[in-house]
Length: 485
Image (cartoon, rainbow, N blue to C red; front, side, top):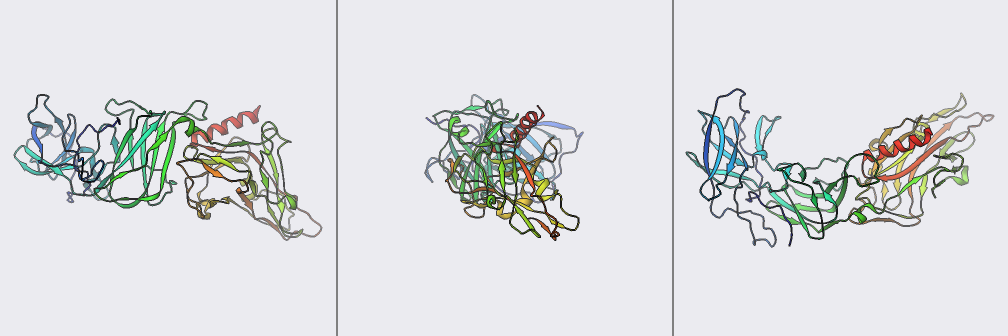
C-alpha cells in the first residue's frame, strides 16, 4: 500500500495569468464586515491529469476545511477560508470584506494568486511553495450569482511531477529544480514542500513502503528536473546544517500542459547515500602526498608530503628555458576512485596556490617580468569544468592561515565533454583517468643570463568532496585548529 498526501482540494491542475488590469492590495484601516459565500464545483470537474494510465482514475475536485481562497472585486483582494460542514450541506467561504464589496472573481488556492510588483498586477500561477497534505491544483470561479460561487478548472498550463521515494532517512523537505539544462549552478529550487512546519506536519520517516511526492509545475516545454531531498545532518558530519541529497534526471522532461510525469522510483538509503566519498588530507600527520602526482616531475616538479605535518609542498616544474621560465605543476590523481555526487556535491581544495600562481607572489630579478598563471579544474573523462570558465565561476572561502584559501567547485555543473556527473548511482573514475587541477602558465620573462629564478612552491592541505558549503567551512575550522597546535 502506498503512502500519499493527496487529501485536499483535487481539481484541474492548471496555470493561467489573469486579471491583467492593475489590482491594488486592500488599504489598511478599512472597516470590514463578515460575509459568507456558498461554494460549489461544477459537476464533472476533475483533474486534467490522470494519476496513472491517461484517461483513467482521474481525481474529482473538492474543497477541504481550511482551504484558503482569493476573493477580488477587480480592485482589492481578500482571503476567504473554506468551512465544510461535518454533516454535509453547503461548503461555505468565510471572509471579512468592505460593505461595498462586490465579488467579481475567486481563485483557489489563495497563495497562487500573487502580486507582480514589476507589472503592478495580480497573477494566478502555480505557487513555488507547496504543501505536504495538498496538491496546489488551480480553480477559478466560472459564475457568481449573488453569494453563490461556482468553480471549475483554471485554464490549462500546468503538469504534475510524481516521485516515489523509499529509504530510511527522516525527510524534512523536498525541492524540485526545474532548469533549461541539467546544471544546478544557480541553486534556486522552483518548487518546495516542507514536512516539518506546515499544518502541524512532521518529518516523514521513509521506509520500504513507497512514499509519493507530487509537484504541480508550470507547463513550459522540455526541462531538466532534479529532486533535492533534505534531512538532518548525519552523525559525524562537519558543519551545523541539514544535508541535501540530489537525484537528477539528465535527459529533458516534456512538461506539457495536463501531463502526468511519473519519474523512476528513488531509494534514499543512508548507507548508500553516505557511501562513496573521498577526502585526501596531505602532510606527514595524514597521508603524505595521498597518491597525488604532478605532470612536470621530469622538469623539476615535485610533491613533498613528509616535511610538514598538515600540508604537502608542491614545487613547480619549468616548461620554458633559463631566460624565459614557464612554471607549471598540475596536481593529478589518476589511481581511480568512486564518488557519490548525489550526496557530495562540492569538490574543494585548501591551498595557497592562488597567492603564488594567480597573484604572482614570487621573487624574480628586477629586470624580469611576470605573467600571472591560470588554474583550471579538468577531469579527463568529463572535460574542463563549466566550459573552461573556471576562474570566473570558481568560489572561494577565506581562512585564518596566511595566504591560504579554499577553492570549491560545484560538481553538478557541466563539463565540456560528457556534460554531467551521475547522481543516481556512484560515479566511477577508472584508473588512468586524470582527475586534475591544471596549475600552469606562471611565466617569468627576460631573465638576465647571470640570474636564476627559484621554482615557485605552493601548499596543499587537503582536497575532498562535501555536501554543502557549511561542511567545507567545518573542514577549514578543523584544519586551522590542527595548524595552531
